[in-house]
Length: 342
Image (cartoon, rainbow, N blue to C red; front, side, top):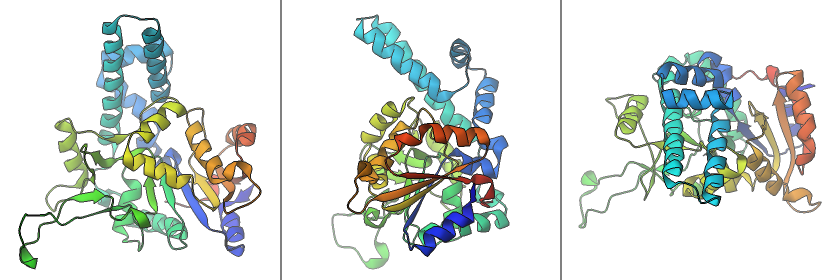
């Protein structure tokens, strides 16, 4: 297998535009004891939530996505058969508990603040990300945590644009410049130049029903502390917690921020490099977006030409080889262990 640097050198020699897709492996590379799926499952087990533990026992698995999928399927079957509404309500309740538990697990396992990441690690990751941002590429993340955001902010990477900014609040009458009041960080005005996309939402993004806002450090409380306050008030971050790829896409398309991010992925050109993303059975919607970017294999027009997928093991390699025909562009595999992110 080729190394990551060999891939980068080749694409740069071709003056090919590069984009990056990161999955949970990006966060696990920083600290697997915090960000692995096993860590999330252990947290839920320790929470002693009887309902969740019983449901995980039934499916004989600790996979959040699998359980969510099974709940959705059960609800559809019961509804189709004209089943008991009380039972459907219980399934909805279980789905909500599962979502809340996942958010709680991510929140509680997360490093307390940006300075918990060693400066050397943060700078190293910034160098990795700059390879894309400084060359007009886009970065897509399916992670819920704050690591990507923290690295971008702490290192003040130029031109890293997530689409959020402040608007001037209309006070109903003219005011002096020093009395102008600005809104919180809202998504929208800067989206035309956006190059950072959280495909499945993130811990710091909230949907007010009118605006998509980004929680911030306010000079008093750390960012994560402010997020915890919101969650305590039953305000939940934008999280795609649905089970199957189809269910995830349905969730995405019903949120203006998520759908914008997804559509951006369907329009990339050049080459896509993926790290820490395994293209599992619940990721069909991502493959679909990649194929749209590749114009579904069309031989003409500007489009996504190739996808480079990082793998850690022979098992991962065989998995990608087994699904390679699902992609409508060239697929190349490289050694993810050669990527020095942290």
